[in-house]
Amino acid sequence: MFSLIKRLISTDKSHTSVYSRDELDSHIDMAVEHFDSRLKLISGYRKKLAPAVEQALIHADALIARLPDSIDVNLKAYSSDPRVYAYFGSADQMEHLFSHSQEFREFAKKPESFPLTHGYALMVMSRQEKSVLGHAQRGDMIQSEVMQQVVNFTGHQLVKPSASEEGVRYDLRERAFQHMVAEAVLKVARHAEKKADLERERIHLKMALKTLQAEHGALDFVAEEAHQTQHKIGQLRKQLAKVELKHDKASRGLESINEYLELLINVLNHSDEYCGLENRSDCLGQHNVVVDPDVGSEVPYAEIRIGELQRYGVIVRYPLNELKDQSRIASQVHSIYGQ
Image (tube, rainbow, N blue to C red; front, side, top):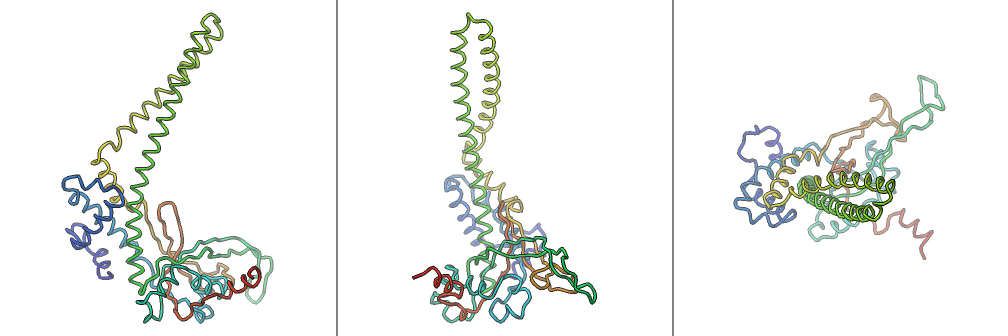
């Protein structure tokens, strides 16, 4: 996979294809099955989808290639690696994350994992930065009540454990591609919802208009009230005209299966709008206080954007022999609230 990534980055875009026919076909099949299987009825649908599918895969592979190398996360690293110390509030928290991750435990229990010493996963987190008052050294002096920026990583989760770093990267590529297809499905659902909302509004306005017209007929002998009702009727007609215009426009979209294919192709061709990844880092000192580069340690992470969701992540490597049936945190909770 890594040789492919190098080709993706260095190869000119005029190439015919950087993927094998089998790989393209498998992802075309995946896109069609997840989006709308009726696309198979379109003559030459594979040929029409192939360039867009390839473009989406190229984008996903380029994103994954930006992820830094994996970081060893273990009890020893917690006390010796500033990055690991920064990611977790305590060694117990780290132990609890891996030992009580259902996905990671299931991975470790598979027969094919028995010969392994380590497991890999993408660790995703939330990142918060806040201002606090603390102590800071200025030359030989310690100053108190100094405003400082502190970074905290919370909400840790492990995504799709694997036997290798390459396995994690491949799975992330597949997830990114599936998300792009899901975005196309979401667009169809939103279109249908918008059309249904407009239809309901259209019916409501028609019924309101009929009611006012009936009232106007009954009040034609009362000049003032009839005039007010006539004004309301005019306003409703204008509203109804606008809604019917929007409804007609919505009805003209996605009328045929070919338009569904065009929508899917358009989403895949603009995959950068739906998935993004940028490498970031903080220079942190003790207690995760933001400090100057010559004082602290660089703590890297990737800023990952999937649709409207933004998380922060790093690929981690964890020793399987440090997995516990019950972490210290879980044991403490059980001793307090358990039987």
